[in-house]
Structure formats: structure tokens, C-alpha cells
Image (cartoon, rainbow, N blue to C red; front, side):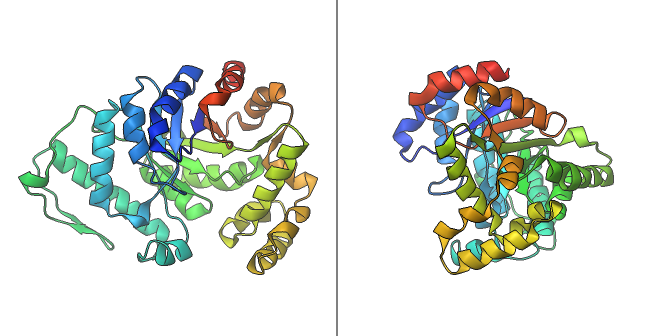
Length: 330
């Protein structure tokens, strides 16, 4: 099991030092996310200032971009990182795609599957004869003139991870992806009963096996009372989102999700954490002193996840603490 790290880096001028520190700490991959900042630009800096650690997105919003646009970004980052780049994509939800990105929301799982196939068709054209003829339901790419063709690279096999919660995206990952980002709001039981069986179904449909698709996830760790309450609040936010209701329903907590959604709709954020019971907290998060956390993570996720990331973002100032955790984990 690999141990990765997520970074926020609100100022890209800090990215070089952060990436070097993450690599020196011993992490296996450095992930950026598409929240307050663009996810790809910091990875160009990270690639330049590291030599071993993988770099990837967890996640970039797929439907905010075109397949060709993503193909160009990934191609350049694969070259810059000498094959260490992982393209992690997510669908986001309808409201954000339509109202924040001003793009079209439609059939997310089939569309994301087709986007991946379209990107690979573009990559194949660049690595091959320069011709592309991809015709799908959502995307058609039939033009690639030499002026816009970057040409072949030494690292053309770019891993693609996608994120999801429900069975349809799990199956897409099993069929056409090298990895699947399990949402941080999860439990071991949910991974066993929902994620793994559907990854396997997707893999079987493409004559692949479960091991062809690595499972990765960020993990909540709460080491003291303050962190427990902070995690409880974050869980209440995620659990209020109807898209993530599947996780709750596995445990029979669907009614709690409905109550949280009602509170969120009224903006009563401060009232929501009280609905997250200790049972829910302990099922979602690793609640343990820091010195026990590595063993607890290994015990919970053995056979379920191939790589884990602590939900808390990395900062170079805390590198000694992180280094001790990484060493204990490995």
C-alpha cells in the first residue's frame, strides 16, 4: 500500500519548496485538487523540482474541459515529469458544471467514459501517424493537423484515475481506467459492498482484472478532540449531499442524510455536526493517536485500497511530523 499526500498551495511560488519537501518526506505521490485553485499548473512546477515522487490530480473537473484540451495538458505533464504524471478526473455535480463552469451536464458516467476514449485516440494520433477519427455520442474529433500535433514522447502511456461514489462510475473505472479515487467520505464496508464489486464488473466487461485498476483514497485521521470535531463537521457536510447518500445507505443511515440535507438547504451548518454520531465518525475516520494511525490505516484498508492519502493537506513546516508517520507506515 502506497502513502500519498495532498497539497493546497494557494501561492504557486511556494510549490517548488512544497514538492521537494513532500518527496524528501518519502511520500509516493503528490496530489493537487481543483478547489480554490487550478490543479495542473502547480504540477508543472512540482515535476521540475522533483525526480522520484509521482504527481497527479485528485481531481481535475473533467466536464470543465474538452478531451483535446485535457490531452494536451496531460501530454505535456507526462513529458515534464518523465512519466510520473497521473491524470485524475472527476465529474463534479450538475449544479457546479452548469452554474459554476457554464458547461453542459449530461449522462455523466457514459460521457466520462467516452471522454477517456477520445483522449486516448488523440494520444494515439500524436504517438502514431497523426490521424484521428473519433466519433462518439458526446464527442467527435476528426481533425489533427501537423501544426497542432506535439509529436511523440517517451512516456505516452498516461495513467487515468477517475473519482466517483456510485456504481456506474466504479464500472467505468474498472473497464477503462488505471485507477479509481474513492471519495474521502467512505467506509470500509461501503468499499467492500459497492466499490469493489462494481470495479470488478467493469473490469470483467473489458477482459481485465480488478488489479488493473488501483484504488486510491484520502483518509480522515482524528488524533485529538479538536480534530474529531473538525472531522465530524466535514462528514456532516459530505453526508448532506444527496450524491453521496449511497455511503449512508450501506449502513442504514439514510434518514440522517435526509435530515442533514434539510439543514444544509436552510443554511444551518452549525447544527449539522451534532447529527453525526460517534458510530458514524469511527466508521468514516481513523480515530486514534498519531503514533497508532499508520497501523490502524493498514489494518482497515488492507485488501481494499492500493494507496492512501491523509485528508489533511501537507505543509513543509510540518515535514518532521509527516516524516515520522510515513516511516512508520512503510
